[in-house]
Image (tube, helix red, strand yellow):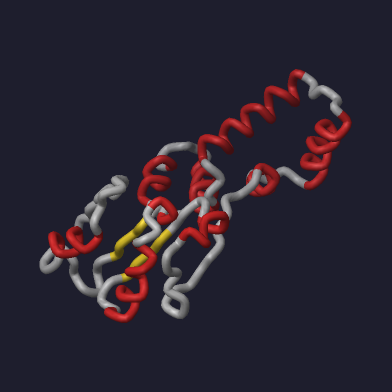
Length: 165
């Protein structure tokens, strides 16, 4: 079944009207997943989470990069009807470990930064390249794993966009 993405980035978005418009054949019970990204921009959506849970026919995932900061802005947090997960991307140190670099390398990098000592041209070239790879990949573990296993960026963007992180 093909997926459909609807962008809801308008303040005048009306979830009730949206649900009315797409009920029936478009929302297939047990096979429809609604993903609300950056819900802090639309805090009223959190009120509906309880009803999605009680209804039970559709799965819902909500995310937001500022949820911890803006949680109090939410009108309702559907307590008892949701599970909260904190997810983090890999930091550069973890990325180096994933690529096979040891603690000695990480300590050397940290030492340069703490002591304000310049890197050699070779060190700068190597770590600049590795850091660029890290920033391109975004640090999401599944994407990094695929990149390291295949030794190529090919497919990385598709995996990032598909949400299979």
